[in-house]
Image (tube, rainbow, N blue to C red; front, side, top):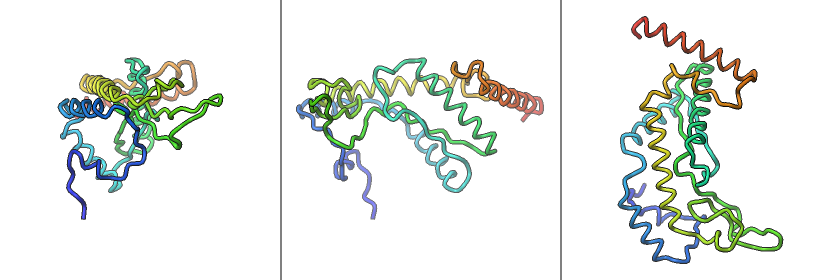
Length: 218
């Protein structure tokens, strides 16, 4: 029988990738702070995703999930996030029209700051240090100080995740993901390539469809 979910129920589960924080008092203080912060996602968003995933499980759509293996604090930039969003929209657009089906988009973004590792340590030039476990745990620099797990990194991960989600929500609310804006989703690497030509043709076809539907009141 399934056990009821609690805020701390994860602590009773088998956990394999556990960082060892040298300052437990600092870790507990960060946990108390995070417990009082606003949620990154809201119940309405969670329920909407559950309904869409149920439809996909019943054969009514296609799930597209994508993003970085692990996000980086240094790469938290507007251009990077926007380009990621544009590429994701392009992929979903092509899949929708090629498969003639609904595409549910799930981004591996805004919180993917941890990296599971096959070994707790790594060696470079004969020197052995704890493995880099992602920016939310420790630093990528190969120094003893950088590889110490720091709970303050969880607070920075929260701040960056909240900023990323707010930016993506603003793009969605502003109509950036509307099919009418498909031409705006082109990325610089596509310029002057056959891919750009094919994408432009698809975007033009979509634009005509949207315009016809508008004229018909659809």
